[in-house]
Length: 214
Ligand SMILES: C[S@@+](CC[C@H](N)C(=O)[O-])C[C@H]1O[C@@H](n2cnc3c(N)ncnc32)[C@H](O)[C@@H]1O
Image 1 (cartoon, protein in one colour):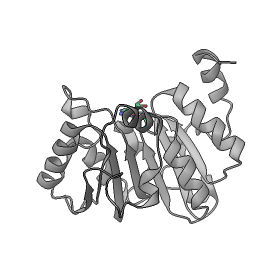
Image 2 (cartoon, rainbow, N blue to C red):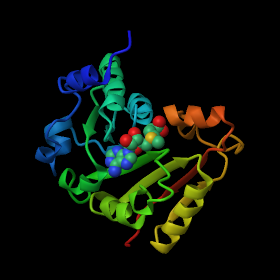
Image 3 (cartoon, rainbow, N blue to C red):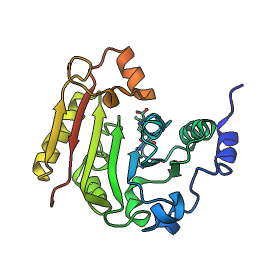
Image 4 (cartoon, rainbow, N blue to C red):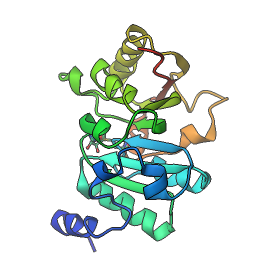
């Protein structure tokens, strides 16, 4: 039976793995939320949370937090995490723009950004833009790696240019992950949007980078 949006929102508010007041955990996520000292990975614009769910199962010694504005998608992610009994996973419904109100400097060890909206006419809203890189700089550990996947050629090239201009060290660039023989298994985790893009024969591209000193 399909559950409508209003019912999803109602249930989301009751899920134990959805953090309702994330600002209260600013600076104390490891101790007060996860009760461990394990590194924290964020999935930004997580949608139905495929990376969070898959990585959390593979790496029980890490903590994972999926973030998105859309409650109906987060409902799918949070429900799956509960069904899988994942204790190292949380979700937050929030705008990434205010991420530094939720995490303190150096609190985040890794970020995944799978298939962000291209925002071709609104470059300021792109998750790889000078503005958003600034938000990430406020919260990541100096050694943090950011992983970005896209099907969109324009966004891919624009992101490479932005990262160069922002002096972000680039670690790996793959123009077509399913053609590249050395692609790691982690890059082949498929999200809801990736499956749609593969069905329309788009090439899936990947960049990993860190933030440097800005
Ligand atoms: C194209 S969808 C991709 C979803 C998922 N990563 C996937 O690959 O299936 C982009 C997602 O980013 C979210 N998003 C975009 N900008 C955001 C922002 N500023 N804060 C929070 N979520 C955002 C949208 O709500 C949407 O769910």
